[in-house]
Image (cartoon, rainbow, N blue to C red; front, side):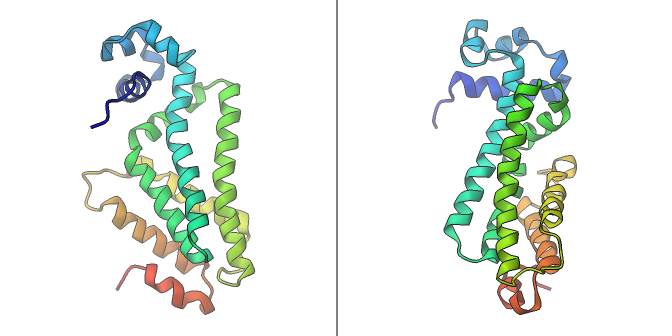
Length: 205
């Protein structure tokens, strides 16, 4: 097993502490005490607790951007690209659920300098997804009467809310939930002429 760096340990422990007691109720002193490190070690990796909260977000949004771009480059049809990106986006809620929960609950605490960077990264992800929808409308795989921007935001909004209700101990795995999301999205936006390709990704009745 690869040993975690001090920076990774700080991020992981702060996620636990922020979930338990809230961002404002956890001090830097408590974080370093929790992991047996020094304040000097903390400030060597983060200039402030605000930067730490930003890093918690950056861990998962950077993963989503990287995986989404790789999916776009790997596949060559709008439908396969969309399905791969849906899998990436839902997977991150399984892998980084604690990070995402902390960030969404505490994001209002971030100063503007970090909020601007976060908005740019989120726009970067949405741009990749929207490009897939636009490509699909141009190839007549996706319904052209649906506004591309609204389709994109609807997909992002539906999946983003997963952090509120998904439980790893629940009756469905994230893979099974992803199949449901994929089925719903494809049935809503795929044209009749493209349904033959899309049906392989739908839930089997």
